[in-house]
Image (cartoon, rainbow over all chains, first blue to last red; front, side):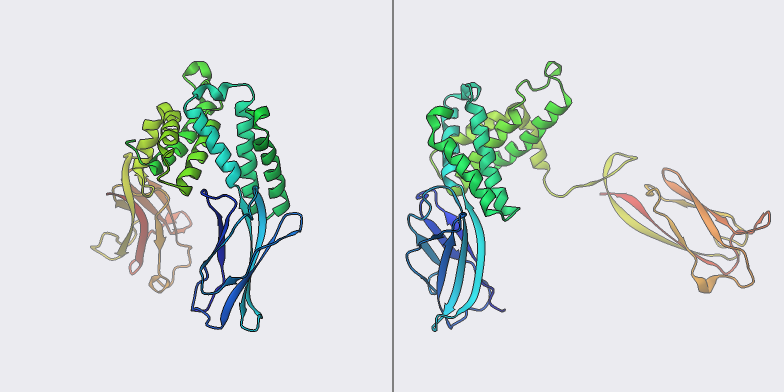
Length: 168
Length: 196
């Protein structure tokens, strides 16, 4: 079976700032491939600096302190050979919402011991708004492949999580 | 906690739908839900539970969050559990008997000849099949069996009953219906419900 380059990215609950890339390529392993070069682009067009190339023999790669807030990143992986020629390339848009999801989870845990919180002034309205923004950000990527719209939603969500004393 | 988190997530999804339906169909003073935010609350808290479950199924917090979502399902829980337990594929129901059924095709071949079920000149034919599906019967007359010398257009109509269908053959010349003719091979196909 011919080689089909692919990868996925995930954010871990244990360390939300760490981005993990996983090679999910299928087909016969190409012996002449030596490494992968990762390029991450933010919604404003800036390149996010990544520490090193990803050697081909390793199926996963962790990048620490990349996800400092919820972001939509376009991640490009180039599979290269000895001569550093790009043999395969794959670009995928990802939406990372771990910070907002964790915040929502903590609000839910707070409610478990105080179920009348949903009736507090503005509490439910703002929690619901936060949930909606996170869903919108994810759908902007999943359905619309729209990095800008996704990041706008995430930035609005960040405002709701950063100023919790005003909203909950 | 007696229930698996994956089950709670499924029940919460179904309860959310049931709650939505109740709000749409009942007024607050007619047994309907008074808090119209209920489906939205259920959705939001279920999403949090899903996030926690995806990230760490053995989290020490999963019980409290799971129990909270379970409590939010409230009186929809038993119905949600029942619906979830039905599972599997959808089933076909015979609308006449209201019982679960499957559908099966049938095929009948009748040669028009003296002494056979269909004889020369017959203008109708009754199919006695229990659970015959309305509108499913088709009559085929293979061309090489059409008798020579007939210039009339041969056609048919069908009347359906609960457990039968009657085919009326129309082979009209002027005011005379000649019906089927010797040598014709009539092929009848259709569908019927069968008990499973």
